[in-house]
Amino acid sequence: MMMLLVLSVVFLVLALLAVPVAIALGLSALLVIAIWGMPGFILAQKMVNGIDSFPLLAVPFFILAASVMNSGGITTRVVDLFSSALGRIRGSSGVVNVGTNVFLAGISGSAVADASASGALLIPEMRKDGYSGAFAAALTAGAAVIGPIIPPSIPLVIYGVIAQVSITKLFVGAYIPGILIAVALIAYVTNYARRHGLSARGRPSWGVIGKQFKGSAWALSMPLLLVVGAKGGLFTVTELGAVLVLYAIFIGWVIHREFSWRQFPGLLTDAGMQTANIMLVVAVSSFIAYLVVVHGIPADIQSLLHNADLSPTEFLLLVNVVFLVAGMFLDSTPATIILVPIFLPAAKSFGIDPTHFGLVVVLNLMVGLIHPPLGLNLLITQSIAKVPMRDVIWASLPIVAIVLTVLLIITFVPQTVLWLPSVMGM
Image (cartoon, rainbow, N blue to C red; front, side, top):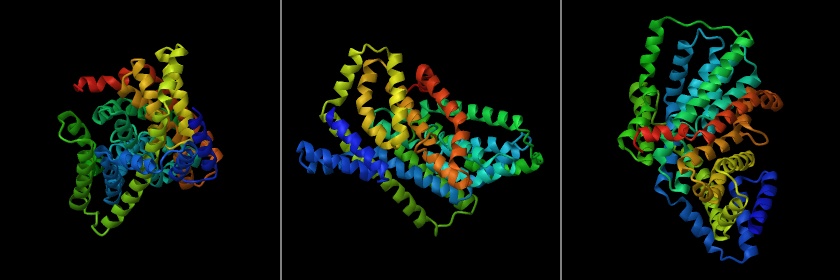
């Protein structure tokens, strides 16, 4: 336990000094190696082993698919369709915001990417509809949390690798929680628009909507690849990522004729840089997870929990608190890699399904994206909206409450996660 305390204190100090997460974790690990007299080659060995995983190849494919989708005009067409179809609803741009993030969730698997893409398009539109900049920024940040819930999901891929759980089963189990968040946010934003007397834009003719639907049909079919692939066993998760890239290129280049091969080297470079950042964090976190296991911390935690005579319900409440706090200070990747090996054995001993536990963990960590002090999604959308951060934080509180409510539902009603995989015979 002393090792974990030293590691945590050093990391928090470095994080407060604005040292990048991967470097802060690496320096903390090096200090532990020096203090406990461990051979230095273990660091390199465990870092390489940590990223030597075939399912992790899905990460760059998901990132590249989202980039190709944006450059090929797919996102813009979907936003235009939603805006036209929902034009008669008061403050329709708020509902469009949530709907667009649900669509983007079926492609990118990244909350940060979705917040950037949807925020640039929809925050100005929401302000035209009469929403405040702070509310538009908060809603966009909250809706983007759906990105890592509805598959594909980079955090679920990482959890599946660490926990050795079927990633496909995690993906299928995530649909209902993601939809619950989307429905709750739509109900909240429509009620907000009604209470504040926001006007409706008006809906164009059915002919115009039909034309827009025809132009968006290929794009809207992209998430179906996930369902078909999962049900039919046609693709592994990694193969699915590659298929999404090819399909996005086909739509943007052949159908919409907006994708240019001149853009492709830049898209590959951006995807490579984002992947490198994620993999560096995965590699260093894998070594720290190794230290945690070597020092017997999972067994110590499990012993403490059983000595405390906790019930499964009390254990899940404790897990929620731990991961919520971790999500406020840590990115989801290191938090998952370091903490899951500590708590998953105890969860199994309490009879908690690893798939259910994985969704609880990931949703907890996603709350950290819209919660102070870090709240990366809030930082992104606040910079787009150009409003004071205190206003965005205040506007985000009801949205945080909505996501926490869904979290409690999936925590204590496991069938919200496990029912769909069981129906599909997983």
